[in-house]
Image (cartoon, rainbow, N blue to C red):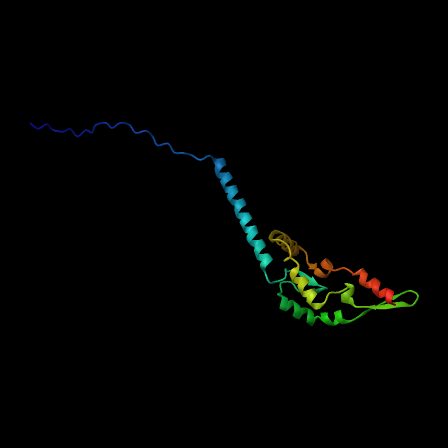
Length: 168
């Protein structure tokens, strides 16, 4: 009556082997390189922004031989005042030429020295006066060599000196 079922399973049709899709090695290397380049661009942009928006002078900045690196504007002002900057700027300069010709110049107006406020402004402006990437390049150069900003931005004002020589 009842037929006994055999325990043998019907042979199943053979399944096709699953093909793994392999990504070629050059695509992985290219993706990694693109990621690194993108990360470097983002990092440089963030670093440039931080340098540009920092309230502090660059790390190795001098004004007329006075170290003001890494200071904010108030600290720079105090350091220059302690070094006697304002007294030097207020002192007139006497120029003596041959044939007993002499004349007096205001050192600030002549461009031989900056006023206290100009010196503070120059110290802070160095490395903060360009675009983000320009400021970052200035920062990197400043980490390699110190900079005296009075030499970077200074220059004699010949028109004032000429006017004073003609008065005498």
